[in-house]
Image 1: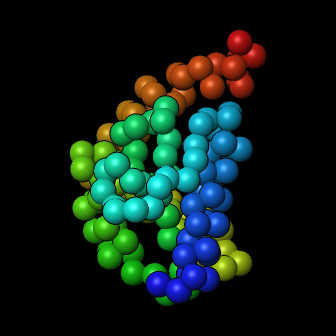
Image 2: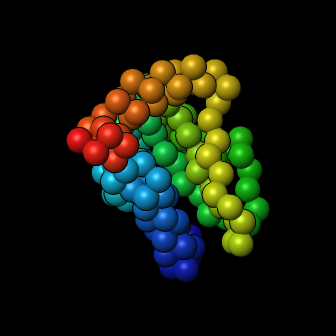
Amino acid sequence: MTINSRAKGARFEREVAQWFRDKHYDLEARRGQQFAGGTDSPDVILPNIPQLHIEAKMVERFNIYDAMKQSIRDSGTKISTVWMRKKGEEMLAIIRADDIDRFSSMWQNDVLTNEYYDRAILGN
C-alpha cells in the first residue's frame, strides 16, 4: 500500500467518525488504531456502540464481497458493516441482510435511547 493510499484511507476513516459525531448528536467516534486487524482494531471506534464493527473503504474500484469478508473476519461477534465512498460520490453504509434485525434492535435500544439522543433531541 502506498503512502497516498494509506493517507486516503486515514482521511476517510476520520470522515466516517466525523459523520457519526455530526449526525448523531456528538456521539463519541474516532479513528481506530490500524495495526493488526481484528476486533480490537476497527477502522472507526464507537465506544457507545461497541457491538458495531466498521470497515471503511475509499476506493475507486470496489469489491463489496471482499470488503464484507474482511469486516466479518475482523468483527468477531459484532455487527459487520462496510462504509465506502468513491471520489465525488456520497458515502454508503453496507450491512448483511441477516444482520438487519440485530442492527435495528441495537440502534433503537443503544443509540436512540442513549444520553446523546436525550441531550440533543430533548434538551436534557
